[in-house]
Length: 286
Image (cartoon, rainbow, N blue to C red; front, side, top):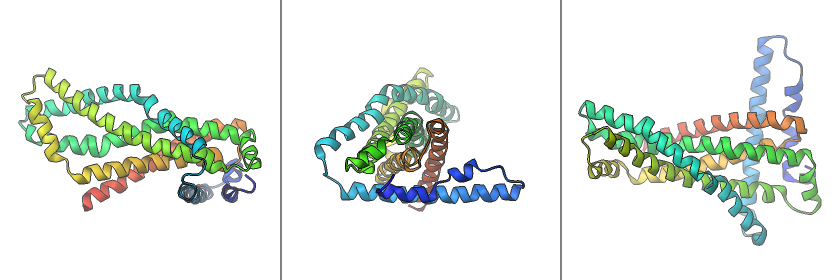
């Protein structure tokens, strides 16, 4: 990408190391993997800062063009996935919550149901599951689309027309991913909690709907809502960064796109787990 800030990523291109012959010893292999890890972290960090700078600097620029693109990405990463997430919420309520309710009822510990549901579903399982599903469904598509565009020279064509590829291609995807994961997480949690009680009711658990939702409201605090919003937005931002970095920041050949997509999904899952671990520490500290 000539004449663009993303050109800096060519300096951290890891393709030379990936295509090199296998090392002769395990220490050389470990050193190469460590060096690739450091290069990837450097590239992702720089790409995230560039994208964030473009988002802040060019807010309001080309509204007539960017507005529809952002709405399209929000629909793609949010509204289009609603049927799948409703099914997942129903299944999650049956597999996790319904079983937890019946197990607590058998030992007479239904008073701890609210706090258990908040910890398992609201804080951990709901946001993480939503992020991984969106990564698998939408993040992969981002890598393939951007990687193909880069390989076919479409990114250079945008630059020749005076259009910033980061602003035009990346920013709408970042906004769409953040809004999509946030909204889908809310629907997933609500659906899972509701369907969980439905399965518990079918198992004749002695717990009224009023008592069930009273325990949930008592277990929830303002910190849960604040950290839930921050976590889902962080998931969306960094998933989009990982996907777009692997699709756009490095020059690719068409035959490399599928392999890069797998690598991006793997790194996206790792990033989600690291973010989740960070928020667990924040919960414990707070």
